[in-house]
Image (cartoon, rainbow, N blue to C red):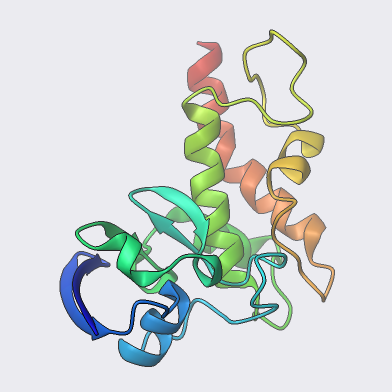
Length: 169
C-alpha cells in the first residue's frame, strides 16, 4: 500500500492504496466521486476526463500515486458558465459523457488561451478564433455516443466568444 494525498476539488484527501490503482478508480471507488465515468477504460472515449493542475487528462490512464500532492478537479468541483451553456445548447442527451466533455472543454479553452496549437492550426500561425473545425479537433478525444456534438460545439463557442473578442481587441 502507498499513502498519497491528493487535493480533490479544493480538499486534501488522504488515500492508502495499492500502487496500481488508477486515478479514476481512486476517485470513484475510494472517494465516492461519480462524475468521472468509466467508459472504455483505455483512454479512447474521454468519459473519465478530469483536470490535473488545470490540464485535462484521462484519469483511467493515470495512476493515483502519480498525483500525490497535486490538484485534481472533477465535474463535482466545477462551477463554470460552460455548464449552463451545455444545457442551453442541448450539449448532452443521456449525460454519461457530459462530465468528461465539460472538463475537457475547460482544459481545451485554457490550452487555446495559452496559445497551444491544434492539428488544424496552420503551421507557424498563432491559434486564432475557435472555429467549429478547431473546437471539433481539440475535443476529438471525447466521444458522445448520443451524437450531441453540434450542441457541445455551440456551447463551447458561446463560452469562448468573450475570450475570442478579448484576444482581438
